Amino acid sequence: MNAASSISQIASLMADPKRSAMLWALIDGTPRLANELAIMTGLSSSSACAHLSLLSSAGLLRHEARGRKRYFRLATPQVGAAVEALASVQLESARGQRPTAPLPPLPLSMRRARRCGDHLGGELAAELYHRLVVAGWLEGSGRYLVVSDEGRAQLALVGVYIDALAPRQPSACVICRCTEWHDSQPHLGGVLGQALFRLFLQSGWMREAEDTRALHISPLGIQQINRIARVKTLQVG
Image (cartoon, rainbow, N blue to C red; front, side):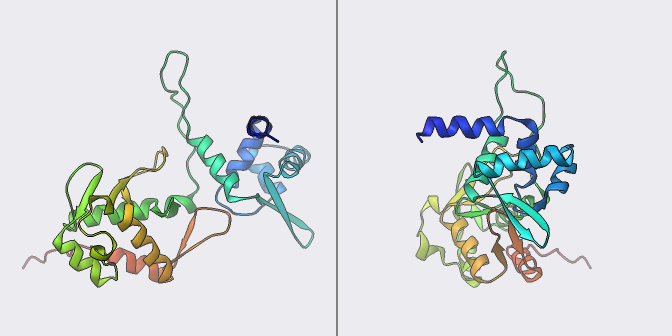
């Protein structure tokens, strides 16, 4: 099957609003029952089963049996990436203006922390970036920043040696906005973003989930990540 034919067949399956709603309901990687998906999309059980059968036969979904129950999930991470990419696209109207309908919100499990390419994305990443700037660990303006002398010293204390990774290279700190989601905020990409993400994974502070970009953060991970570049409140007295 050539690329054009494949795109056409997949697009025809996703073109149905109910089927696209089902795919979106599964974007966070959580397996769901057919009845649950029927309720979420406003379908009868029989109609939901018919749509799920089509999506499964095409290889967009897979199901797993747990006793007498069947749970559905996206077949591969590539399916999830395609659904997410399509949901983030805003079509131009006939007059060249963007539609006023809001983008679908990301599931809660993906808003807090998710893989963004080779680095950390989501609210946690945005908060960390903000603290690094406020604490003076990053300097400059625009998309590319540099790590300050204070930042180099402090990052070394948590196990990230920026001089070994990219000595004095502006590309070490890239301010990233990888998607068009309404919740997308500036966060760190580049060499520093990659190094911090590896640190969090190797330390066991967070782990990647199967078939989704959502990340699971441990209580210790939340505590440790929130300590990085935490500016102490001045005591008055």
